[in-house]
Amino acid sequence: MTTGNGVQREDKINVPQFQTLMLPLLKVMGCGHEMTTIQIRDAVADNLEMTAEALRQHLPTGPQNAFNNQMGCAITFLFKAGLLTRPRRGIYIISEIGKQVLLENPVEIDAEFLRSYGDFNKFYDSPRGEYESLLPADSADKQLTEEGEIEVNPSQIHRQLRDEILTKIIQVYHKNIKDI
Image (cartoon, rainbow, N blue to C red; front, side, top):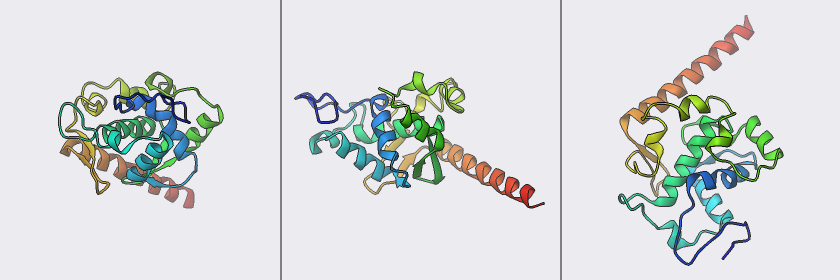
């Protein structure tokens, strides 16, 4: 069976893989509003007409929710490619680059498509750690909980905080340089 959004849905419950979720996710973000990871997840699930049963499905490797896992990967890939920005922890908004991509009306967005954007290649080609730790097989690295928080290992939290702090320092530095 095909949903109104063109996504194939079978009798067996299948959660879309993260690369399949990237285009619907970017379209949801096209509204231009800041959204939490949970708001993004819920909007994409509604857009794809996901059933409650599919949304409760867990990864075969553990107790992690499969859809949340795939959404976490999709968000991370779009963020690393610069199509989304993160004004605050756990809050995302579409970037100017992301808006431009939507104007081009792509048929799909996958990792190969993202290779031409931002620092995505540095992220994607990194040694096991940053990219591969987000893949579904490593379910312990990233999980959206019911409360809407992302539970990650300490090294992932450290990287996120470091990135946020460096971004803020650069913003303040550039603002102060302009004021001189």
